Length: 441
Ligand code: UGA
Image (tube, rainbow, N blue to C red; front, side):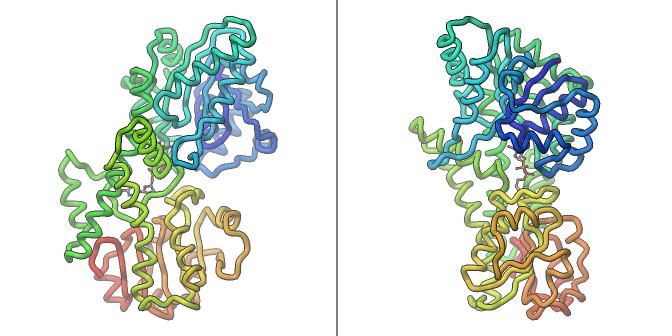
């Protein structure tokens, strides 16, 4: 099938590459000429395990190409995926200017039937707005061309995006058109062989499904963080509580890990946008607002624990930070708990000595050169000469820690672990003052 993807960011590149890999003929379009030029040279602008080799293989096979030419992009695919960004507006609602700009381009250049697919995470009602915008442009051109708009939200996790795309639990398509159903079946047939994953539903239900899924997952995390704060004060170990409740299949073990708060480009933005949608229609989404505020508070706990360990005075201290990305296997720093921590440390007059396996470049890009930020080449150098250690991301390599050795490296034996990587008893018997999440101090 001939497929066009608008937007060569994270979602667009993963979608385009995976669809090309199963034999579709894919053109990716982006207005950012420098990005398209780099992609043409085989340079991938994002870090995602496995993406580079899959992308290069499909470019080589002639199934995947890149362009900045909207006319060419619209002419190419019968399926036109919109996978451009929807950044939060000043009030937290999703800004649709890029989505609607693509709708205009499609209306401008189309001259045969197209299925326009909203892949970006967009508020309920966006498919109708895209439809209206395309119809307006066609009317202005004075032509009549048939088209449909459907919703096909993505459920990719950064770091596991290829796996999620090819072996995801479900493929949601919101449409009321049989023509669209047929074409979407054909598009996703290679992923739909062993059991039926395609779920057809109403457009608005599909749009809301995306937000509901992320809001539910964020709620689980904030709930666990809330309980962990209680556990800490009540002298209970949250890790035991987690196992205790997770064993109930109605609750399950997934996404109930307490930590230093959720980050990334999806949960914070989507919870906020859904709450905003609610208030725009006169409904106060109290639970969503609480999920967000619990998360904001949780991000501050790393600093609070550390500050308490130093009696509120961190001036002149050097703090080692292990892990800067919002989660392992990505270089993404958007809304990462490490940022809340570092910014609080700087404000308190401390210096940060940090290491992350992937996001050092991203950290430098965000914060630039500054005296109170030293980025080092590995986890060992990060603790050399440091006063204390804080763990923000659960990269695998941090799990193998020689507590006795660490004790000899730190000027004060203080470890704040935002991801509960170690047994408190082992850390304490090595002479460390170990502060985890919800495990008593
Ligand atoms: C999330 C969803 O998991 C995807 O299904 C969705 O498609 C995606 O958003 C999106 O909307 O595009 P992602 O943001 O890549 O994916 O990351 P997750 O693996 O879900 O982690 C999100 C955050 O929650 C991380 O900061 C992680 O540390 C935190 N988390 C996760 C916890 O604190 N505890 C947990 O038990 C699980």
